[in-house]
Every structure is written in C-alpha cells, then in structure tokens.
Length: 117
Image (cartoon, rainbow, N blue to C red; front, side):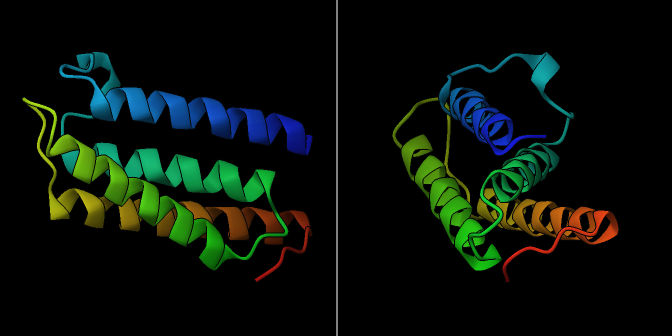
C-alpha cells in the first residue's frame, strides 16, 4: 500500500480514537466489552499504521508519540464528566503500542522490507 494511504488511514484512525475517547457516551458497537482491550486494540492499530506510513522513523519515536497521545487523552478525560482518566488505561495503551509495532516489524520482516530501528 502506498505511504499516502497508510498516512491517511493513520489520520482517520487518530480522529476516530479521539472521538471515541473524548465523547461522553461512545457507541457500544465500538467496544470489545472490556475497556483495557479497547485501549490495547486502538493503540495497536494506531502504532501499526503509523509505522507503515512513516517507516523511516525509529520505532521508539512512534512509541513515544503514541504514549504522549495516550497520556493526553487520559489527562483530558479527567476534565470530561462522565469520563475519567486512569493509569491502567495508559498501561493498556502501552501494551497495544508494543503489539502494533511488533506486528509491523514482523510483517515487514516476512515481506522482506527493511525498516529503521
């Protein structure tokens, strides 16, 4: 898939995750039924598509950017009733980021595409 497509998908996913995270009552259809899994899946998808869209950026840069985004969401949720920010949500974000970056590395290795560290 062209880089532009991955980057567009990343932007759209970021908007969707932002809306789901900051809306007072996100739709039930967008949930796995367990909040921590929602976080892990969302951040796995975000980190995977960002790594595909910006392959030359080091993995740690992707991880740092998404960790900062996850922290921002948690801080904003402390100000948005009935939402609440939780450290455990941020930990689930971090697990998802690791999974997404790991999946991206595995996929790229299997397809023979070399990426920056």
